Amino acid sequence: PNNTGLGPVDFNLNEYMAAKARRVNEALDHAVPLRHPAKIHESMRYSLLAGGKRVRPVLALASCDLVGGDEAAAMPVACAAEMIHTMSLIHDDLPCMDDDDLRRGQPTNHRAFGEDTAILAGDALLSLAFEHVAARTTGVAPERVVRALAELGSAVGSDGLVGGQIVDIASEGLAVDLNVLEYIHIHKTARLLEAAAVCGAIVGGGEDGEVERVRRYARCVGLLFQVVDDILDVTKTSEELGKTAGKDLATDKATYPKLMGLDKARDFARTLVVKAEEELSGFDEARAAPLYHLAHYIAHRQN
Ligand code: GRG
Image 1 (cartoon, protein in one colour):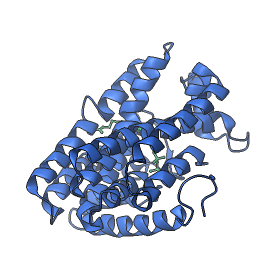
Image 2: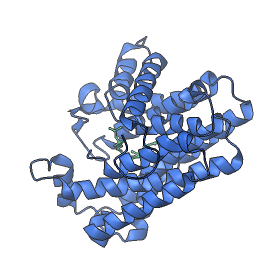
Image 3: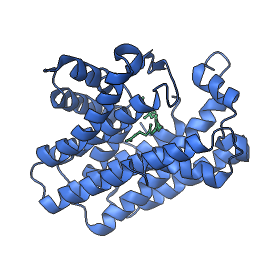
Image 4: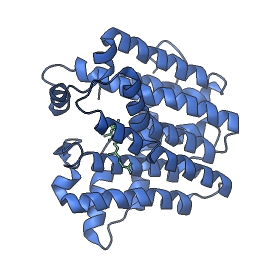
């Protein structure tokens, strides 16, 4: 049921997300079977199948639904987005980056398999993401598959996740302003969410105007995702204040609430939801319902 007081009422996002996530998990399981050499595939599967909200694949599949595409057409790009996300988490946790021991409540990949294997598992997942889209997408015009591959590539590289991470590293210990903070968040977080949604719309057969509206929607949702993350960091109860928040305080990491105050950060989050909704307004209401509710889910999520 819809508890926002807005939008379509007969849509249950939890059921929608659970059904999509279940099929994504099955597809990921098949995409990385446990085969020789066992150690690398165990390590890849360990992180890929370790839970996670599956927001990126659900965005890809929901964007495909939005433009009237077949779910099967978007499953490879949905899986690829999760493979890229997973590899970025594995590398982000390494001793030379964030040096984290736990991820999703379990030992990080390098803690479980060693640093050498963790680096290779990340590399293999990144490579597999592109191979998987190119080799497994069926019933889609090759030109659209190539566009999706380019979209994913640009979200990962020096103008994407890697660009965000290098600026994040370079700003450590420095006074960061809102422009730099936004650069980091757009590149580390929003670009991949955007690419997932855009790829779903491309392989789903969306027209150029539709794909661009999906892009603008996802850009807002991507930034929203991070603003909410920052808000959660300061609003968690002291008992929930675990490693992450404690660490952020210790390193004095810049966040939206720190730079603009909690109330303004919440206003900013609300503005982003409204903007995201506006981009959906030209679409069929029933088809847009999942993305509409997904934006609200991200705005109100508790983890
Ligand atoms: C991509 C080649 C390449 C290298 C990696 C380490 C790195 C460069 C980038 C860091 C990217 C990073 C860790 C961004 C944070 C993204 C983020 C918001 C993670 C949390 O996502 P959720 O909440 O996590 O969707 P779950 O666990 O639910 O999947």
